Image (cartoon, rainbow, N blue to C red; front, side, top):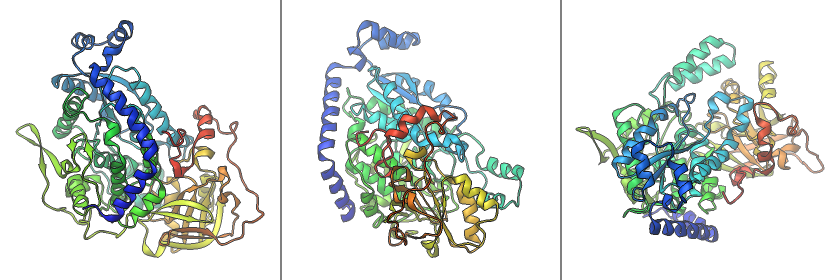
Length: 609
């Protein structure tokens, strides 16, 4: 039986989305019916169009593409060899093509999408393009699929904005089945506690650049996703819970026999669930209201990335579904935190996987009635498929139900014995607007902070104040504004965490309030992020002055300034288009003018993604 609050929130989403979801499904079903009636999509192309579509194909594929029998499968890839998470995709297309051919289809690389690394661009101008890249990736995915050559899609993406962008783009072709093909996390490197300690030591000037670089290189050391539980791994966990990965595919390491077997199985499955078989599974039907609520529950139960308070809103909108922060807040009150992964603990995703991983995580949430079981997935009808874990037996890939509980309660616990009774992400509201607070790593004594504001219009100014010693011995709330989507693309402000953590450890009362992002990397520092409305859009944060007392109460869910702002005029300003140049930023000026607020997904597509 589904938890009453989960059921109530789902009903609310369904009611609110009735008209837009109905219109979306009508388009999906109409396109699907046409595809099923006429055979492979490329059969509708004129001869010249089709000839262009197979001109460069190898002889065997050219013959199949010329014919009208075998379904066509699009491969949309985010491969590059700079991102560790995406480097394994170099070898995927040939493997996927072979597996599709064995399953009776024919596959082509339909297109590539950009994939930038937030880890490389932290604190740099390039980070101001990061969030915008999600919508650009959606557009690039649409371009790849727009050739009308395809009956299904294999989507290759892992990190931050790439997976949400791929899904938004695929949902515009909601009549096509779509299977996400993960690459898996790198093996564990330097322990997270040691890495965090090194970062704080570097911030205090106790170690030099060489020693700091050694520590970082020991953490991020090989192909595969970074092992901490940030947005990239939150993406992966959510795709599995939403039924868009094969069961258990999420956290298997790259370049292993099991990983290769799962990759081939994903290709075969894309053919099996195509429009001309008995298991037709269009992605627009998979991503329904129940799947979206399941994703929110999984995000909360795992202490996932706060970026998904925006990404899930945008992904839902792409399927005609309206999800709000109020929905997330309601679910957070009843969904317990059952995992501890860095930055919410010291374990990484490999430890989570070893403790029982997705099969135990999903199974426990199902048993507690916190997930909807009656959903459509790429593995078949019912989320129960995801209680199973993949394994190799005599070289053959099989799935076995995981019946034993977590083997490490320090990393993964049952719902009845959680780390916290709520989901670790709180929504805040008050006279400064609405914001998100990730509290899963914050000590109880830091959940309420009331202190004078120190106002900065640039993160570099705060870092400079720390370096000059101006923040020592002071209780304060750092207000970092003009960092929202309309101001400068809403960069993540990870570089602020180590110095603020240093001050917190010294016994100072410290918190941060910003219209920018921190992706959960605020860690132990109390933070109100994604503040909406942002400073550049007339938000009250633009009226704050040094010394105004700000109260951040994550327990009560409030964010207030204890000062009268009446009659004040905004101070500071976002960069002008003329100032917002370099690193290609000027190419995205139109995004700044059209992007919506954080609360509605910070998307240039508005409410019709």
